[in-house]
Image: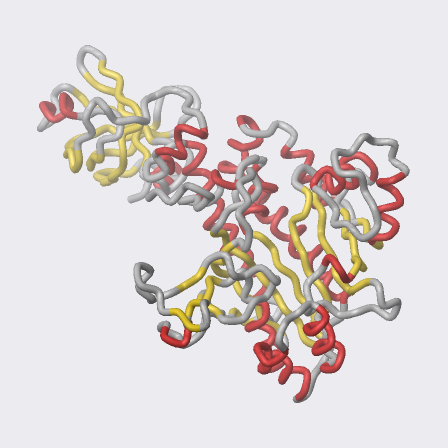
Length: 457
């Protein structure tokens, strides 16, 4: 049985067997107390191992971190804070852990735990975090699938540049010690794909093809950041959820994004209470109020131009002075959500010069139908737009930005054959986890972080 099943038992159980890892062991004169955890839940089950145990000599070889199998009876516990304990009748050491086991019974820093990322899920904090991550992924699928969305597996290797900076992570089979050249440049015609290939920064372009066939689709998979950014909010590899809807405009997009965030906040509050409570107690004591604020309040919807005016009139000494035509910085986003409106904000209709080529141009010729969802404590959590469905406008925009329309022939075809208004957004899975747990560094919400200079494990 698993520990969570034992702890949720409604009556004593004879002859159960459980396997797990020793969190602590405390020896008394005639017996030992073992705190055992198998990763199924935050709580440990206490094992009482009597000195008269059939193979009690094995107790001497059990230390913190050891993997053991215990057989015994589940009985009511006389101790406080626990209903059940396991009275062992047999105990087997599956894998011993020597004294240099790095996770001893003390508080470890996040920086230290990143250096042993292969062991950190055995701690309370990271066990809780990655259980929550798993449940949240399931909730995302549930939210979208029950609304008629189909999950599309888009390629990780791509020759199409979505964000305009997709060339950072190249994929090649060429001999890097003898790279073929043509006219002084790398001859990618002799590479595996016969052309330059990169790791994707987004599955959006490909998923649009399925949006304009199946109506409602989404991606959920790994993407690779297209810039060398080493901050607490950025990672080189991360996961993205990208829903896309046909026959939908920017307002539909904002409706879906708000509904999705509020659904996921309510999900973790209701279905992940034990694990979430750890973060509320030990990571961010303001987290319950933050989550209540998101779940209980309608999101403000604010044009970019008005957002800039509010920031300019705020009387704050921003590090980056707000100005029309410049992107909002994290300090601006947090001012709007935490100080001015004190709730989530959706900013929309951004200047076209700071947004991607595929966003639909507005009638003013200066802005595009783009939107960002800003959340208290974290800033941008979602970015999206209505897509440009007009062939001529899209082709012209590609040329304005110096892209060759021939490289996007299939993407333009979608506007040539049965084009329709459509919209979508990208939700960074790790950013979402940071919001829901109060964890401040993206390196701590992904199992094995990939950041500049870091490719361990």
